[in-house]
Amino acid sequence: MSKGKIRLWLPLILLGLWAAGPGPGFLIQPIPQRGDNAPRPFFDYQVPPGAIIHDAVVLTNLTDHPLTLILYPADGQTASNGGVTFPPREQSPQGPGRWITLSQDRITLQPHSAQAVAFRLQVPANARGESMAGLIAQPEAPPSSEQRPFTVTLIRRVAVAVRIRVVSAQAPLAFHLRLVGLALRVSPEGQQTLQVRLYNPGYYGVKGEGQLLIFDKAGQRQRARAIQLDYLLPGATVTLAVPLAPPLSPGTYRVSLHLRHNDKLEFTTHALFTVPEPSPIAPLPMPQAGPDRNRWLALAASLLALLVLLEGWELYRLRRRLNEKPR
Image (cartoon, rainbow, N blue to C red; front, side):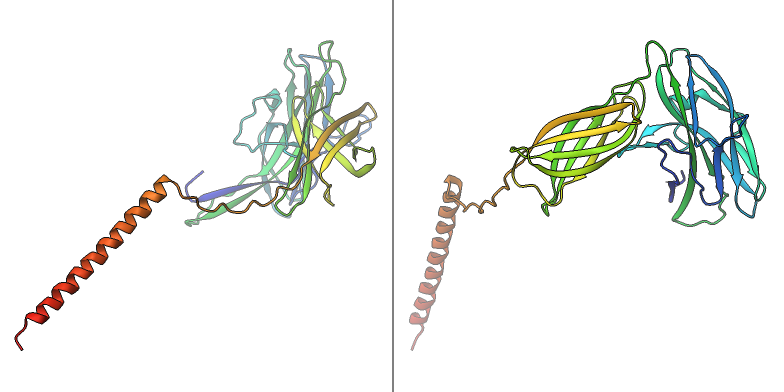
């Protein structure tokens, strides 16, 4: 990146397991399945280790002018608040994105036209469980002839997910979820947020929805909040922020979390957390006289006394000179 330029990456779609919707001027979609010509929202494969798959993605130009698109594979990553996102082109894939080989990585489409680009997916023989990759399209940035001290380049990307499930005896198709953290955060304004940290220890991704219930010591339900867990990749963690307005009173509470994953996983867990008493505002301490402070006070008093003596001596000399003048 040249000095004085900023490049902004604007993902148009933050993917969970849905294909990218229409972006400003172009689409990227899986080619319809053979036979019934049914559309696919994303690429979804369940294969044995070492499998080789040939497929294609369709790029569509929705504009009234020719459009050149750059196409590249990328590794899927868990977003900070859940779901799956994909890095920019400059970040080379180190995981399942490396399994994909495109027949071409640059294509020019005429106005209102579409074209398929074939790719080859080779699953390693030692692959286990679920992996997530993506195919990303972005417009080719036109060369800029303007010389300005500060420019901003806006690059829009559209992605379609590629999910690969490698089911084997070492990685049976099962779903797991674990609560690994629970913390209360209080803002300076007194607003309370319960941070729920979840971890996926299994081989396959998990998503779902459910409810978080909060009970006091007497067993009375104090809060009920809907919970939405976007796609959580294997080995990944995510922190869900649950607002508790109005604030809970100080005390100990029990959390009961219920989540359902595609009718295949019922996840229920319980944990405790405490709302502390508000900290009283302590008065500012009065300065105490210590040895160092006393020493400086004594020095200041001595200097003041010396100044008084010098001033008195000058007055005495002045008066004496006046008395010695002849009359």
